[in-house]
Every structure is written in C-alpha cells, then in structure tokens.
Length: 322
Image 1: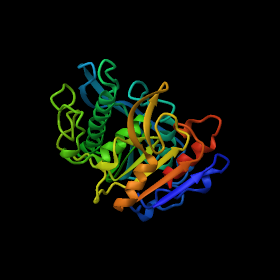
Image 2: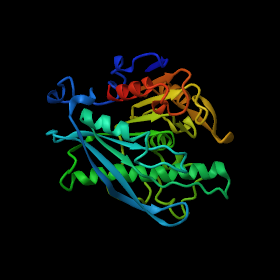
Image 3: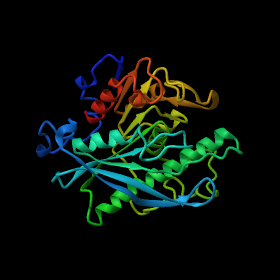
Image 4: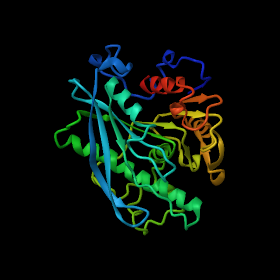
C-alpha cells in the first residue's frame, strides 16, 4: 500500500512510480526508458473521433448513441498496447468526452505509448425524483455504459484489432463523476450488490450487472482502476478477492466530493452520503488489494485542472505513467 501526501510546491516529475505495482509487467522491447514513462516517447497523437460503441435509453427514455474518442501514438509499431478508458466529469449533468479535464490526459498518455479512449456516457438526473436515488441511477447508467465500452474494445480485437490493443492490459479511470463510474464498475461485481435504488425494469436500467448498452458476449473486466476525485456509494461493495488494483488522487479540501466520508455537494446543497478516496483506500488495505493513494494537501476538486497550481497536473500525469 502506498499513501503519499503532496503540496503544490513539489515538482511532480520526480515521482514517476505510483502504478508500478498495479500494472502487469511490460515486455522487454517496451522497456526502452521512454515508452509509458515520458510524453516525448512519440512525436504526435492520432485521434479517431466519435467512434460508436453502443446505444441505450437515457434519463428521458430516448435512445442515445454512445461514442468514444480513441487516441493512439503516431508512428508506433507495437501490435499489443495497453488500453486506458477514461470517463469525464460533470456531476452527471454536464461534461463531455472532449472536456478540458480529460483531453490533456488522453493526449499525454497516448504520447507515452498507451491507447487511450475518452468515452461518452448517458448524462442526466431526474430532478423531479428523490435526488439521492436519482444520483445512484445516474451512476448506474454510467457503469452500464463503461462496461459496454470495455466490451467494445475486446470485440474490436476480434475484428482486425484496429487500435493494436492488448486485452490483458485494459484499465479504466475517471474524473469526478467519471471516477464514480470507474470505481463502481470495478467493485460492484455481484448481482446482490446492485444498489437497492435500481429498478431493473425501468427503461434504460435493465441488464443486471452488465447492462444493455451493447457488445454482449465479451468481458467487461478491467486490470486496474484509477480514480481522480471520486467516491463509492459504500465500501461494502469491496470484498476480499477483488483483483483490480486501485490508484487514486484526491484533494483534502475537495468541496464537491469528500476526501473522506461525507456528502456530495452541489451548489452548497448536500445530496447523498458517500465514501471518498481515503475511506476507499482504507478498505483496500483491509482486504489486501494493491492500491496507491496520492493525497493532495489543501487541494480542491479535480486538482489537475487547477490553473493556479500547474504542478498538480504534472504530478497526475507522472503518477499515472509510473
């Protein structure tokens, strides 16, 4: 277990080691000192925009197309590369897979040699319903969509593998709302754990754990998870035997998603009690799950986009690449 606290004055690039225990070993030809370590490993990035990966009914009971932007390193000849799927933030009310909190991470990770996919997912919370319940439903729609996205890439490997993906190295991450999706995707893995607030007979909510957003017949399992300023509804979802190593970054002064246990807050209103990153990592330690938490002392919500402390971004990309 690693738990590290940082202040904004520290230079992040001194710490490129955080995920070493989480990611499987790379092949010898990949250990050139640059690939997966430095953004200068490749000169440029190619992007396939708005690639359809699924469809499902949204909060308004209308069919919605789901898309992903796929970032790859230009000039790369590797035939089996790790894939990182990232879900954006926005409180399930706004945001997109081209948001400012996600695109720089996608570009930099792709320049390091990863294939990176920025996924859209169904947004919307029914403000006429009981908001805590509607928030849980929004998370669950996102989980169904992320499962479909992971399945889509496994499906793509069987049909020519256009992005040269290694299906033994698929990782899922998220930022804020997207981190809720990533955490619940990984650790809600039993039918009995589906939140009680979910009515599987509701339009767009069916399909059990896997959902109905597309690409059935393929696994949605991931090999690791990263969480930037997210939380779990409860750490009771995490059991002995979980095998998705966890890496998190969270600011201690996050006023939106609590660093510890507390309420999610929107415009000053408390919505639902959750377990933030520090509590999630306490549970990870308890159950013997490989994990690393970077605590950013004094930082607010989603530290890596703090324009007044650019070191936070350097630390984030450096740690993810480690």
